Image (cartoon, rainbow, N blue to C red; front, side):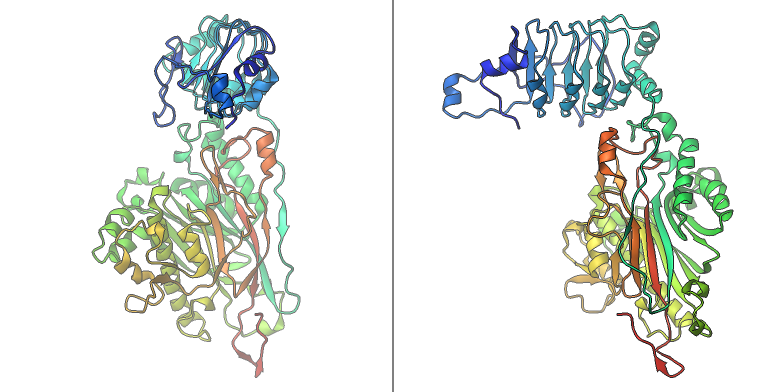
Length: 589
């Protein structure tokens, strides 16, 4: 926090050397002369009308007394403001009313923490467009000025509760809208919806090469995309108030989503938040024309709904190019059913896990042998198989236990699928070895890289008393999902047998989910590290570009989802029996 200067210095600098008064106060001012709209109280709660001033004496300052202040008032018919004011970036409240200010410089946007700004009773004829970048503002008072027009950039102030415009010679169109019930919100929405979109297009995301293809042993290359497309029913102005309503509309967003998918041209697609109706009316027919086939399952709640309601339930979908893969099996993993079957009397399992209807899907694919470059030794070999899974875990940060258990559930189910598949389709595999057939898990895990979910997947297990379980009584039933089984030795850990690695390691992506309130990595692609290599990944959108263009969150007119897609290129090792023509083939690792 910036410390206040000695009062004479602060006064002189803040008012640009002209006569005036500067006060730091400890409570913000409310006002009854403006149009207010309802906002969540926990976000911002204006205090009472009275401000209390405390001016530190020279003696107190000399004795080293410290002060902490985030509010400032400048008054006294001030005509200009010193540039030093814009360095006080810690300010949350700024009172500039009852002065003679004819203009406000664009640098005011540097005060990015301001929640309250009072510019009433000045001589302002215009406002800087940069005011629209001050998205922390909850109250903006512009009463009794000379404003005839407002910059449309004010529409970006999606958290604004109160806008004071009275006493300005504004056009009748603006006043009519402003004076309607909920007029402030209607006016801001109108300005945002009609604000010109800049820049014209996104910069390209870079391709990051991590490794070269093996030049000795036969391998197959293919690409996989993981993408949460943001279901239409979740794309609301209540959640994404910074996005114009037309850019949230599904008819607009679906074009950008399909463009992203087509441009990536992945061999396998794993999509989350796919609405049932859109799967059958958009994704499946569009992608079939491009050589894909697909498998989809909606969330479990769809079973209990009417046919009309079921259309709007979202779920997970996997698509694959039929020229490279053939479908062998398809599976659905319903977490609430697994919770019920494995509760073992645990109230936490029944009350917290079983009530969430998230799902996962998986397809067992046969890799066409010509992907391995037409190697002669492929004749007569076993089917080259790969299991691709897609899941979307519960969203709520308060339910870290549910996310971790859902992850354990899908890993346990995938193990069962692979063991059965290996026994019937790959007789040369050692019995009960889930690593015999390669696995790729794409998921919106709704969990950060330091979570128990990622630790479990990456290291092969977590402690039974891991903090993400929240000290709830899960111990007995969790052993159902451990690789040793309920009767095995646990050593205090719940484990799995897969050897998995995240394709995006070492902070290759600073975030996969980018909203105003949250920016972080929650989407992942894990793969069997003993049978595959990642040769390259699609890198992030330039973070500086987002900052330079004042993009505080997605969706955005150029970015159709609140998630960024993941795209990787995998190298798959040819799976061969231990002996071929009496010769042992070398192992890659």
